[in-house]
Amino acid sequence: MAEASRWHLGGTPKHKLRYREDVEIRTTLQELLLYSIFLINLCILTFGMVNPHMYYLNKVMSSLFLDTSVAGEERTNFKSIRSITDFWKFMEGPLLDGLYWDSWYNNENLYDLKNSSRIYYENILLGLPRVRQLKVRNGTCKVHSFFRSLMDECYDKYTSKNEDTADFGLKQHTEWKYSSPRTNSPWHWGFVGVYQNGGYIFTLSKSKSETLNKFINLRMNSWITRGTRVIFIDFSVYNANVNLFCIIRLVAEFPATGGILTSWQFYSVKLLRYVSFYDYFIASCEIIFCIFIIVFTIQEIKKLKEFKFAYFKSIWNWLELLLLVLCFSTVFFSLYSNMQIYRMIGRLLRNTEKYSDFYFLAYWHIYYNNIIAITIFFAWIKNMFLAIINDTYSEVKADYSIGRRPDFQLGKMIKKSYNNALEKLKLKKPETDEDKKRMENKDLAEKARREGFDEKEIQSAEQMKKWKERLEKKYYSTEIQDDYQTVTQQEFRDLFLYAVELEKELHYVSLKLNRVMRKVSALQY
Image (cartoon, rainbow, N blue to C red):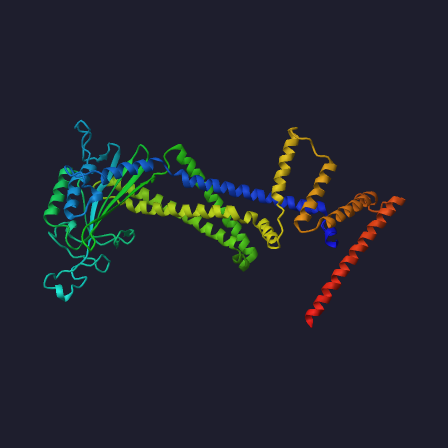
């Protein structure tokens, strides 16, 4: 009974408490709106650079270089290569035909080959294609003594320690002489090994006939040996119609078991990012993204100064720091790739007789896509659980921990705003004071039921509340504190009954305390 009467009484003035809750809810909504704008902006940046033409460009290029068969042999294409003979057939057939387009479909000359090759008449071949081989030394493994009479050579799997760096064959040009790897070049992860840059390298000619003669010369002089472990074919094309680069790598691995394993990589990327009006819209979103990063960084610095070491005790603060690190990494990768793109394109335009390593740019672009994908993942995680609703979440968690159903003030505020809008549009009759009071009493009773009070306690508390309100209405004035009015007999009776009920409550509480004290005393013995 004592507890039942307590849910409608309180020390804090009701109007102040309600004002404080409204301010907190408005602040929560403002922060939620601000973070929603940040998320929308981040989504635009993530998906705005994705172009459906990327898929189709990959598809036509892979079909040309992977599925085209050797003339007269329907089953021999790059995917089906299993021997060195198959490899040279591909190099001298489908690869050459795919790289060099020197005439229209009616055999009419389309352009001068000294300028550039245009694959499918639309895709400009950038620079010259490059072929690169990595080998291992003889003696990198041991032959068992039983078989040394049959075989005295042994070539282990590829590692940087086993790599062969000595000149071989004709020893005249770069394809027969080892070239050291560059320090900033990424390694390639294949089926049976991880391969570094460098090796025995040569670039193709702009003339199809010269390139064919080159391949024949290499084949006749055994450029591929028992120590060969991998051959890379790298080239890049640019399609001005859709403003996309396609960076292509064809890989043939020669495992120590024999045979050939083929793999490939086709990366269609938008390296020249600011061309159309939509691209400049994306650029404005990037500026907004940087502004958000600066604002969030300032907020976290202020929090760190205020809470100091306690700041690192909250998982939400760690999530904020992780997001900031990812955002700054995204900006760094974007700036770095753009600088490298313009530097490399400038070098290509100055000298079209060399290989342009656009694979390096594709590698960094993939890292950029991975980082921004991780960033948007954690940003949505933060939006779901986040510090925006951190206080409300803590209250909800506390309510559930003691078995009560939480009361969501945010939902009530939205419902209240909806009802006000209906009243202004005259789609609903405005509520009177009596209706509001009736609804408030109903909500309080429902809340008491959720908290475990029985119906008898609730009804008794409602009756006491009515007495209290009637007495306050008669004798209490918020404007004149010392106002005095006479008390009628009926009012005195109501006051007396209210005092009797209070006395019963105190007696009830006293009995409970006595029982608790007796149980405690019994436990001590």
